[in-house]
Length: 182
Image 1 (cartoon, rainbow, N blue to C red):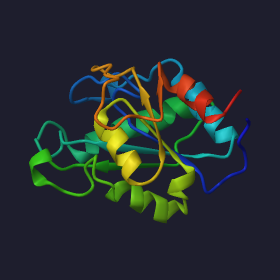
Image 2 (image 1 turned 45 degrees about the vertical axis):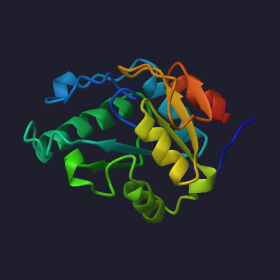
Image 3 (image 1 turned 60 degrees about the vertical axis):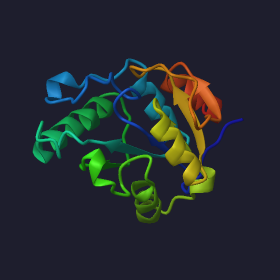
């Protein structure tokens, strides 16, 4: 089933462990390297009319490991690498808070998803959340989206409290399950 032209649909994607290896507090743009299938997968989503939105927890800012400027530079590298391959991210939302802050924007909190949906006129019930951790699945379920767990993260855990709608080996398999083909 090919899905296209639905600008009210989005694929919300986690960053670390989903788009790139989780290097435990990515401190420098040089440490950020996309998985090989990611540019093609994102381009396929773009071509199918999905908005692609990154939602990421970045507590390294609150912990003092890196600055928001460093994070901006890492995200610019992400955009540049995708751009070289004809792909793009529509938006990036991040939580800079420490887990102890108990904010609503840190996944599994849903504030960033709701903010992105409002900003970009996205129908959450017609959208998907792809990530490598339980917090991604919990957030996706909480906003009414379909959830896909990718096993590219460090945990490779498929025995989660919030069972995903699908388990994929990587982002490319995940978007094929959504119904997007090249």
